[in-house]
Amino acid sequence: MDPSIFKTYDIRGLYPDQLDEEAAWKIGHATAKFLRSLLRGYERGQANAQSLCVGRDMRTHSPSLTDALTAGMNATGANVIDIGMIDTPQMYFAINHLGTCGGVQVTASHNGPEYNGFKISGIDAKPVSGDTGLNEIKHIATALLHTKGISDGSVEKCSITEHYKNHVLKFLNPGLKPLRIVIDASNGMAGKSVPEIFYDLDIEIIPINFAHDGTFNHPPNPLVEANLQELKDTVIAERADVGICFDGDADRLMMVDEHGRNIGCDLLTSLMVPYFLQKNPNSAIVYDLRSSHVLQEEILKHGGIPRRERVGHSFMKKSLRDSHAAFGGEISGHFYYRDNFYTDSGMITLVHVLNILSQTDGSISELIEPLRRYSSTGEVNFEVDDKETKMKELARVYSEGQVDDLDGVTVQFKDWWFNCRPSNTEPLLRLIIEAKSQDQLDEKYEELKRLLGEPVDH
Image (cartoon, rainbow, N blue to C red):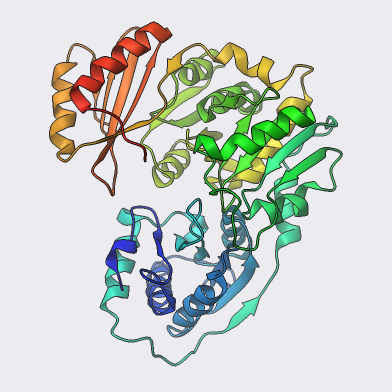
């Protein structure tokens, strides 16, 4: 087994060169051992407490990897509840709805069709990442010499689609406007989940790339600008109210307004702030430290508590739990909800967007425009061999600002700020700069490039 498939937050690799059925069996075996060991001394009254959920995305090799993963779990004596082809947020719902000790979604998320992987969650759908068990699972799996064992566990196939639909739609307010929405499913799991959940509503959905047979008309990553072009063209041609692009496993989304203009996810989070704080006065709102300062300003303006956090779903989810925050957002398109087991959901985000658009006569662009108060580079990559030394140099050069090291190095001045953080897996530093004016942003960007070199596409 190639140990490099174990990433910071999940397991992912090329199929079958890095990740095949033998690796899946070992990972299933190791995951079941680890998750069931957490039950010791932990009272669980549910009948399924010793069981695990397994789900998969639409990739052509996901069924065989799921079967191998399940066989490895069964060999430890664990029972498996197979909930079929689902979006990743449905896995989080299933773990809580069925009361299992955890679950695994077979998916490579936004990667191309040549990839596959596993997202592992524990009790209550808490994420299992490098520092919360993934390294231990890696140790157990890579130590296994064979994929043999008596299958003492059972497999039960179970559809929870109707329960999931009811859960998502319980957040929908009465008085839905007859909106026209273009949705690009990126040939991923939104192509299955959106019809199941939303087609009965009094809205018009114009579907793009809803086929989910394991092939992709464009890479299923909505953060890449080129992947949004078809959505933008369709929104304009159809005179739609808004456009939404999901990633491969439908836990993330990006939005464009009725003119086809991008809506940054930090601006979308900012738009949702008064909506959530009206329902949850004085609540904390969690956001990743790359977000525009407009987000902090909106939270304070509406009486909330800003909670700035490290980048990454495990940090965001923990922070949400620790602060009992109403919701949180990352600029990567993940949106997290207290009333969704402190987990992220693309479908529930769509529901909240429908609610916001239905309670105003204005267009989405008119709602967003007052939030476009600053200029930003977005996140830019630089190839740097000694990342730690370079970040220390940045902190030294800009020591007159307010410096912190929550995630990489952040330096804040009165009229501008930047964050520079390291990639977990590559020799890259990721830079984002925000300023009060475009001229100032251009000046500071050129200044920082003299220290970091020329940006690279990645």
